[in-house]
Image (cartoon, rainbow, N blue to C red; front, side, top):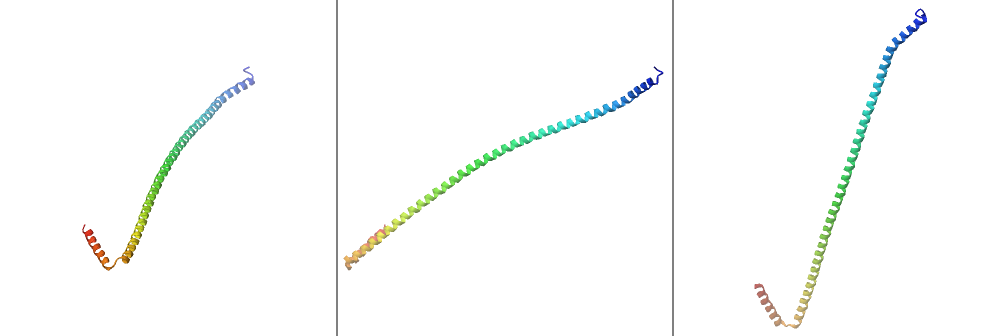
Length: 161
């Protein structure tokens, strides 16, 4: 058996395989470890990216909710302002209407007073004219003079008091 060259070829082959297998095995294991580490790094990076994406998504959702709340607040404030402006406008309009109504009443009262005064003046003027005509027709010269003197006395006594 030890004399057989096939045996020594087989032993040499086994030694060669063992000698080559160990470094190849080490290289293979090293290569596999490197691949495993690369895959782990890729997984870690993917998890980091996933976490960042989730954080970004939650931040965007939070901002979206904040914006919705701000929009609601702005809409409510706008509604309140519109209501206030409407009330203020209605108050001012009612005040203007009230003032105009008062002015109209004052003008109507003034026009009524003016009309009454004109009627009174007309009546007095016509009464005086009629009285003068009647007196001129019925009184003679001496009665006219006597009436003038009596009127002067009454006028002077009225002015003294």
